[in-house]
Length: 428
Ligand SMILES: NC(=O)C1=CN([C@@H]2O[C@H](COP(=O)(O)OP(=O)(O)OC[C@H]3O[C@@H](n4cnc5c(N)ncnc54)[C@H](OP(=O)(O)O)[C@@H]3O)[C@@H](O)[C@H]2O)C=CC1
Ligand SMILES: N[C@@H](CC=O)C(=O)O
Ligand code: NA
Image (cartoon, rainbow, N blue to C red; front, side, top):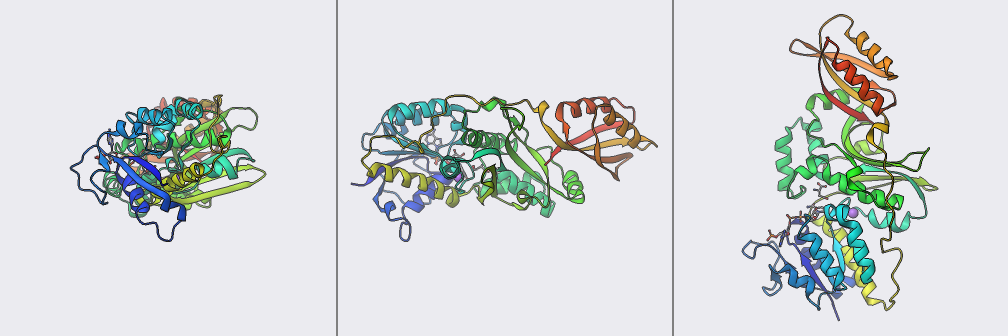
């Protein structure tokens, strides 16, 4: 007997998944055992890129998650509600769930996994992070014997696509965002991409897997890419860096707390993450004894994401075809405790800052003295340009505690010679 899927959503990812499932020749033979039984959408009038028998499409998503015939619910509608309620109902009805919905998992993961465990079913989410890149399963299984100390990466395809085109073509932010939307990379509300929220959801999920505890999303520090200007991209280039939106989860060596954050970062051109361009994502996992492992691939888009969704479906088909009633501990999520996350003020990092100053003698000296008063030591100071009457000074610091750096900046802002501080970015 075939395994019956109830797919919720037939947008970018839903369509890619149905296309893959309708074209099984040359792929894993288990795919032939899958039946697309129901597909739930918002509108029956939309023109679809896939052909499905008319009785398969429905707008009644509740009926799908309550249908006794459905074995696996594949949630691809996105957003928080009704996605959360539909997932919970499916789980309570004893159905396995596959989801690409990092927003729902990052916020309601505790409730969703507790319900799944109580019902003896699985929630698989490979597509939720890194699109088509296998990273969830490797963290849960292949790498789980390591003590992880850092998970960092480029986990949002839309912003990496935007930053890459701003860097290589000098393109304008809003034009490039429109292209990312047209290509199906962006979220329904692209502010989730641009403001770093999508990356924050993803690093919360990766940190939870890497460090073995729940993550309170509100503790994840998050800055997006709106403030990244062409001027900063050009300065960064001259200084030997590229600007990337990085998501980082790092264990402090001297304590049990984690730093979990998302922000635009100056990445040295020699670093493995510097060369990840366009919609590609990469996740660098560092642990003991393995050392460094990097996962690279397409982070968004219909086909790539469908690959991850369908691999989860396949895992569940295999589960359904084996007779054991015992849960597989490598497939469940059994975290109970929350990880302790340090405030951003405790972060120790290098900074890049751009100042607009009055063109007076001794300004650089005043900046240096002010930084010195707060224990901030400077790695480089560059004054190359002017913006109208104002001189532009760019500094890169050595490692400094963020709280101390912020105090120094507050003092610098009060200097008579300082007009403004248009940019402040962290340096890897
Ligand atoms: N796009 C990508 O590259 C990636 C997306 N994801 C995640 O995958 C999920 C889906 O994204 P994507 O395919 O891009 O989204 P789309 O907006 O393209 O598609 C959403 C689909 O869900 C349906 N839908 C939405 N809300 C409802 C509702 N309330 N009732 C019934 N149907 C509904 C829509 O119906 P209709 O067609 O009738 O409007 C549409 O078919 C999201 O969680 C996203 O974060 C993950 C990785 C990559
Ligand atoms: N909007 C997301 C889609 C994949 O998760 C992105 O751009 O990465
Ligand atoms: Na993935």
